[in-house]
Image (tube, rainbow, N blue to C red; front, side):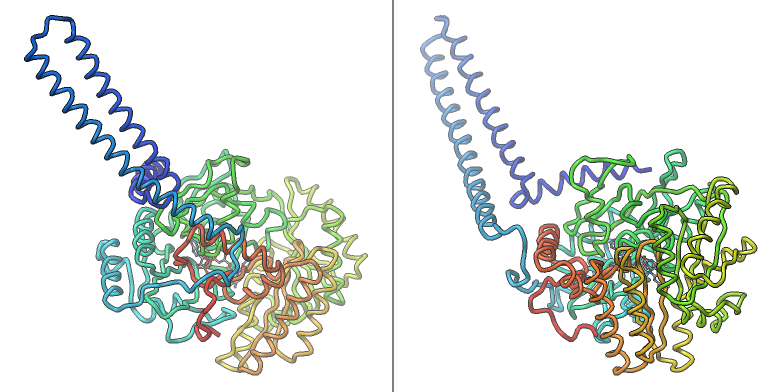
Length: 611
Ligand SMILES: Cc1cc2nc3c(=O)[nH]c(=O)nc-3n(C[C@H](O)[C@H](O)[C@H](O)COP(=O)(O)OP(=O)(O)OC[C@H]3O[C@@H](n4cnc5c(N)ncnc54)[C@H](O)[C@@H]3O)c2cc1C
């Protein structure tokens, strides 16, 4: 199934290169090649004529035939020479123009990085007549079938924001249309067209991201492309190779349901409803990451449509490769700013034959976090280590989200312990219990059944809803701010403890959940009005500052979106972000892909596009 698109892809790329010869270096080569081919042909023409002359110069020729030969040869040679010269001059001119534009370009972009101040504002389409033409062309690409696009306000809203986003769009800014493409080729046509008319595009799949990743900015003509409606098929499972190729719109939970029949699983577990392309675009991870890696370690190859419509497949299907730049790494975590991911081949992992869950409570969050760090430091390989603070345990009891509502309301660690034999699991449990007691554990119990084991993890996954539920019981319009940071293991207990102190002092409803195996934790904070939102902003800013001071990161897995752009600057400094901007502008010179996300690309960015 993969063969055909690749062939079509190559045809397409070649066609595109030929068309756009004034811009790419591949095309420059083509011009060189074309002109030298032509010269070669001309050379052959001269020598044939000369050969004929020699042949005819054997003394048997008459003067009239010689004269006619002379005229024919001279005229042909002159015509040929003139033609060839004209062609060469013409090409030379083109070449000179091209070289000059390249040289000028080189002068202009001689810097290896691109500071924001070197840029002017992007020039997006904004006149109504062109917008109308754009809308009708986009519909035409999708066969003018109303099932394949929507301009209904409810769809426009649903593709612009969620209640759990940290940042929200200006209510007056919505995409003009939501497109539901069926194939990589359709997306390629859409992007090539939008690039030509400088139409901003927002990629969308599961809509579960948290930092305003897909919120619309820019009141211009704006298009959202949702690949989850039709591009949600499993393409091929390579069971022996432990990998699977899927379309980007496949939900990760659906994928796990499919893989379970083969004793396999997907390594990451982001929010309920997230898709594989969204997981890749956000470089997600989840509770299993410390065992199976984050999305970055799980991608084998992907197919991406670049902003000009070019289709790129990043690699073949080997587990490892050192062939050239790491394009998988470039697109993983690009948050829709470099292109649209349409297909992905990912690693599958073997589900543990034997597995149990231990639930362990501690007197303080610092003790729980220390226990998690010690487990990792001692090289004990568990399937997952999750931490929920006392507030979270209370809220889970209160929400009734699990069949149990008598969880001990203390900081609690959930350990998933797996192995290929029960003996291995038992050994690991013994080691774990020892470390838990060294860290003052107060209660150590196992899930008593498979159902309970599943339920424990569901409790972890619905943590966000439990907090939101608690907020809604005090105010129907309450919102939740959920955010994450990650730090080295040794700094984890201190950073989490200080953050908890500040959260509890704020008086806001809050909870903490952590992927402790990765030194990664999340805060969930409820706010009901501007004053409480301002408090949240301060707490989050302090939490990030603390993490960065501890040599950590402003986000371990949620990504940057629009909400954490300033924090990325704080964490990395100007030059790395300027380098990212340079890469972005090289791939997307018209800045059409997911404008204003990850870092700024407009020095005059409108201020009231979002809150
Ligand atoms: C309750 C809850 C729990 C969560 N738990 C976790 C967790 O444990 N771990 C974790 O890592 N995250 C978690 N998340 C966050 C979220 O699920 C992840 O960020 C997820 O990867 C987003 O995937 P999505 O399909 O919903 O993407 P979307 O939200 O649709 O998009 C995310 C970003 O990717 C871009 N994008 C979407 N599709 C494409 C595409 N085809 N090509 C290129 N770019 C694209 C979008 O423009 C956007 O910038 C949680 C969220 C919720 C609501």
